[in-house]
Amino acid sequence: MAENHAQNKAKLISETRRRFEAEYVTDKPEKYDPRDVERLQQDDNWVESYLHWRHNVVDETLKMLDESFQWRKEFSVNDLNESSIPRWLLEIGGIYLHGYDKEGNKLFWIRVKYHIKDQKTILDKKKLIAFWLERYAKRENGKPITVMFDLSETGLNSIDMDFVRFIINCFKVYYPKYLSKMVIFDMPWIMNAAFKIVKSWLGPEAVSLLKFTSKNEVQDYVSVEYLPPHMGGTDPFKYSYPPLVDDDFQTPLCENGPIASEDETSSKEDIESDGKETLETISNEEQTALLKKTNPAESTPKAEESEKVDSKLKTFKKPLSVFKGPLLHISPAEELYFGSTESGEKKTLIVLTNVTKNIVAFKVRTTAPEKYRVKPSNSSCDPGASVDIVVSPHGGLTVSAQDRFLIMAAEMEQPSGTGPAELTQFWKEVPRNKVMEHRLRCHTVESNKPNTLTLKDNALNMLDKTSEDIYLQLNRLLESNRKLEDQVQRCIWFQQLLLALTMLLLAFAVSFFYSLYS
Picture 1 (cartoon, one colour):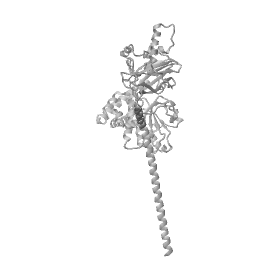
Picture 2 (picture 1 turned 60 degrees about the vertical axis):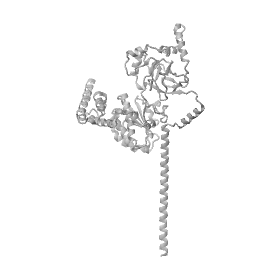
Picture 3 (picture 1 turned 135 degrees about the vertical axis):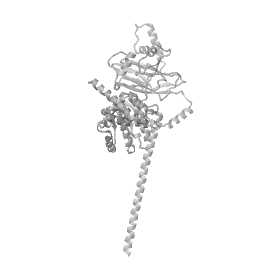
Picture 4 (picture 1 turned 45 degrees about the horizontal axis):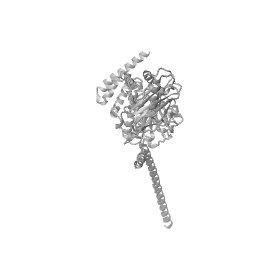
């Protein structure tokens, strides 16, 4: 049965490719981006996603491919990058990827309150949607996504049916099979009529994917750890740009050189690099020695080795703030503090404490892998134990506040070994919703400056408002201006009404006296 299904699917994919090439590409090849046509011939999953959305009807699938490919060329989707989008749109935080729902699907946030209907900017906003979806599609290749339509604090000026229709078309035509569900939060009653139109655009099958929620109901789909406070959640995340939110966190440099990511197979170079150790670094074995109490029966060389390691770690200041996660307590809680170049204290510590009854596998990733050395960056922590992770800038590179670190952790319920090969296999198989994630920002501790410079810096900081604050102030200003205009219009109308009544009374008086004396 399974073999027949696979054969039928292969035949449908082959027929779709052949007919699209013969019936659409041959006559007008300039209609499409050649890269899309080439990908269609090579990527079975891509073809299958269009077939699935059209119930394996090849004729309908071909029409859908034609429309989708024309749109991709018109929007230059394959070439979209950060420079294609106005910076203010990236800074405002109206559209971004962050967090996961309870099924492990990525959350695509659309904060409607930041969208003001404006024909001058609608094309750029559509490109921003396409930029994020294409970025996600290339990275995840078919994994569903949950759209979080946050309608809190929205008004009539945020309703833009053209923009909503574009978003729906993205999932109906341009990125089929990607929509898991669309969670609509805190929809004002005034928008009920608008969403009746939206339902007609979606079609009967997709309507079931719409989930209208309030603060209590939204937690049926997304756990509190990935919900902001205004939705009743506990997520401390605050949008900022740059870098891009949920940017590609990659494996940083280990003390022995680059580590292959979990998507790559282990190579001889990785094995050889594990055997090398620089004089200024701390090995995995030394880290393990720190976690265990010294046994008097142990040999003297091991005790001396442990003392050397302990003296190295004493040079670090233990962080005080703690993030209390379900698997690990992580210290510091939010920011990694690096000393300035003048102080010479460039290294910093991340302390992980296992609060479960099982071994917890962890790995450290960063948005700037070429800049930092991390030891260990991929290991495990025994129940009740702690691990010190040493982070240091590589080769004298400068720490930036834009750099971020991601701590990923997952519970190893069935012991299967904690060696490099076993950990690599574990991370490939562990479900996404079982992975705890915590992000850390970087912060540089500056040396003392003269008072004049400090005052100057404080003055600059007071002026350094975020784009979001400015945008909100402008919105409030425009809103108050509109209210003032409405009041003025009402006053003018009232004055005109009084003038008309006065003229009417005057005419009545004149006619009365005229009839009286005539």
